[in-house]
Length: 227
Image (cartoon, rainbow, N blue to C red; front, side):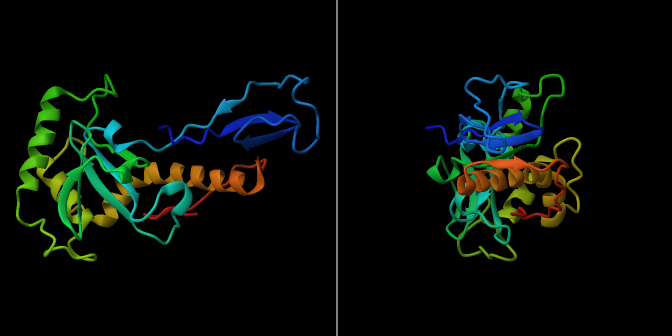
């Protein structure tokens, strides 16, 4: 099942409009869009979320409860996990470390850590093997039991940081990496566009469409999403 709501953007009478389906009339000037051709063709706004199972060898994040589009608020923390080369999610929470293809990871943000610059969508087989080795070795460590879990001090971020330190991927200084720097350096480039998409989705859901202001909005983002 595809969870992409399909946001469409079109331009008319000096404005940019976002909606789920192209309306028969322009929301501002009421011109009949079925007979009047648009100056440029409408386009679909890229959907930022993926099923974790379709994002092998990545870090994956989602809201701790619910999903991004409907439930997430900016004061809530994000839950983070790691996928293996088959797209299985390894996650550490109050139940301890577990791995599965749970339905709760159908709307996740995927953060690739290792990419071949010559073929961005491909991951070298040796790296794939080493990624799995690092992940499976860490999973066997008895540090990740439910008894040792602490929401503040020993949590899903602790597990991901330990994984990154074991993996030591090229181009990432893992020594001294903590939750704050992990969020700033790796998560922010993905959470900021996602926040804009969520905000857009909710405005269209409420009003039927969103008219973009003439000047682009500038948002300040931290490791939560600003909504």
